[in-house]
Amino acid sequence: MTLPLQHIAFSMLDLVPVREGHSVADALAVSLRTARHAEQLGFARYWLAEHHNLGGIASSATAVLVGHIAGGTERIRVGSGGVMLPNHAPLVVAEAFGTLAELYPGRIDLGLGRAPGTDPMTMRALRRDRIESVDDFPRDVAELQRLLAEPTPGQRLVATPGAGTQVPIWLLGSSLFSAQLAAERGLPYAFASHFAPAMLMQALQVYRGAFKPSAQCPKPYVIIGVPLVAAPTDAEAQFLASSIFRRVLGILRGERGLLAPPEEDFLAQLNPQERAGIANFLACAVIGGPDTVREGLQALARETACDEMMFTCDVYDPALRLRALDIAAQVRAGGVTAPT
Image (cartoon, rainbow, N blue to C red; front, side, top):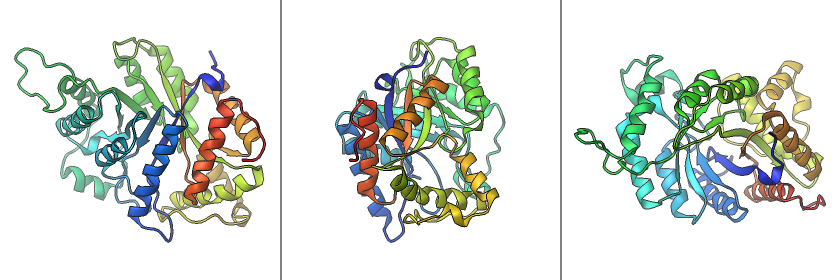
């Protein structure tokens, strides 16, 4: 059943982009400011994504950032979107997020991804010579669940902190593997449609069709990733979105850099194949003025019947990024569509 926008939770996913002309410290300050603003707008959660050795992204030490954001806010849930489990021993993850749960009770989420979130060289540097198999991720998820649950009699390996904190585990994915696993384990599921939308509908069908209720999640719960650029007019939003178009083009070309300022008529400078590649990457993006944003979000809600939308919003100007979240919140509340 499709929920009206007023009944769909809004949240934020932050890769902590480093902007041209600014430092990593500036990026971290912008993220905290954004999290506080999202909290004021009533957003449900603020997640940070693990990436390594990628220019322009400062979210590699994800658990540290989760603590930083949680410590600078009061109510909003804060978590990983996600921790890339192949890079870490489950005990280390359980202890880190168990510590966060003790510091900020009832506010910490543990989203888990199956990809390394980096290149093979960096993956080897993170986990040295470990060779991954298809069975590792389900086994590691199960171990994390045990480590975060109440200890059983005779349990020899106990996460301290961690045991008994029951930190909610979310599975993240861009294909069918994690959708199936989340369904089997009765876990909430977040689909990475903000950068890999191709299998969104198929994954949601698999997840909902195979879902088995659990104590944590009695019925399916779906988050979809939505790239968002909202502005008072469609024209301004398209201009601001050129920063994202430039970033996506760099990803497609294998070139990573800092988040660049917007550029007039950027798409017009590209060839048809490049424009098509960007469009496919951003197929779930909502870019425009208030009316366009409303229509776009409503269309996604109808198509996916999602429970929650998690925005990425890599607008170059931090103040205009906050304005974009304001517009989304106004749209959700059914507010006026006049320019903000």
